[in-house]
Image (cartoon, rainbow, N blue to C red; front, side, top):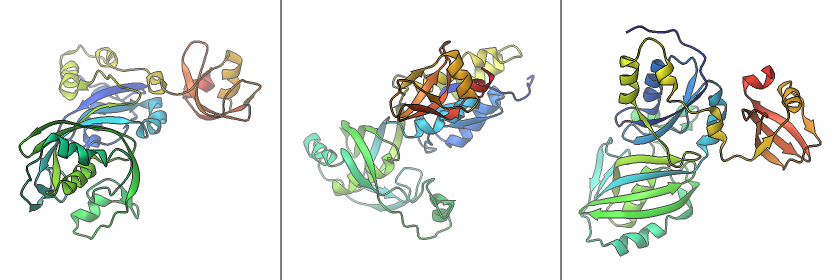
Length: 307
């Protein structure tokens, strides 16, 4: 196969991450196919998990952090009666307990306790850092890992089905929420423990109805296309798609020019707070912050200065 050099590339890809790969491993495979110099993802999925993993190329990485804090939705299957050290099926079994006879009403009563602003202890096998090192690295060395509880938001928690010792749940939650921890704690409240056996991210704001692309599809396009990357590039979404939910500030060409040279803009009817600034062409030029009637540049795309 003819290999092209790595290149500057801007845009987003809505990847359907397969099970068995870390988010970083999936990212690197996608980056290699697209021959992109710079790429990042917006919120890790566990190797066991599948579903939406937005991949940001080039200037889109500047807004990746905005999507990390976005609301997300998942479907998960929880196995009752078995607790593991990772809170999912990839871990070692710690204990097993009988599963009580449960009906939907009993489960839903427990689920209600986990809707809203709740305190949650993240899994010890997680990418959270302590002393500059991921917790999973400490746990794998056999160190005692203590993780403080933190507050997270669970916006919706729906029971989809009960099948023997398995529950299927749909969860909509805010940034920092661990579905593994949620399942672990629900299992304890049900009196038998639980762990995640399957997890799929359905959507993440602003991509609420995403059309996802699989790695297999990307690899097939790369393998079967003529030399060149046009077929792959057609899969990308513009940088502007990541800013769809942000307050919008429309600027004139003269204002874009000033902003691109690092100047603040006075005299605009702009609200306080972060906004996405747009040129008359409709192209986003970056993030700005309104403070007391003055708009200050925060994080601009490289083409803002070129304007």
